[in-house]
Length: 299
Image (cartoon, rainbow, N blue to C red; front, side, top):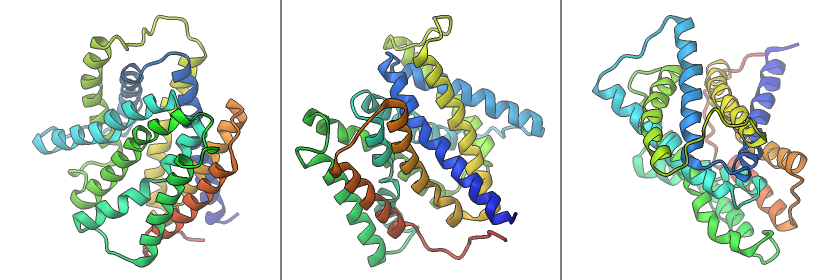
């Protein structure tokens, strides 16, 4: 078997795992788990897993104003803000719709990159951005698209998460990661995020009691949190092995498998408008995705 074969198989597994987090989140919120409580424990799990990884690697986290400031920023726009909005939106929208909405990340990232001067304008990528907007419109506008027309009001809330992720990617592209590798960065962001999320969870009454019965909702959330940490670190590893262009194709798999997992686990079904939205979103991703010559994949 060639290296390309195994890396492609790894990419498929990575995307399928990432896509699985959408229906798992839906299961968690429908069982009564609240955003700040979920974020707190997600941060705790992230701290433990990345902390153990650093311990095994014999690394530490350099502490100075620059690293603390950057970890704080990543904690805010990488988890606290997008997840608080995304978890709330997931309580109302089908998990498959949330998977399709996530596909808007590269479309949103493009105009931000133009503003920051980290990318350049092309008509091809503008067409991709427009297709992304059409995809959102196909979800929101037709009367037969969503199971309940009231869900349209939740779409702006669902779009906060991809906006934050797009901003996060552009921040890293523009200013780097303060000299931190992905594991150190995620560990620092998780520690700071835990310190912020704890008082928010307690003061809002959303804290999840770890001694309570371990029901389906808690099991789904714990599995989703572990998957999130593993796939994030795996994605960064894949970039190093195969290049950003090859690894970036995971966005197609995340969206597609997120819809499939939602159909299998939640028995969700979608109108033709939603399938059309998925199609134009995937085409939009293909057009917006940069075509660099940094794909290091070897056969």
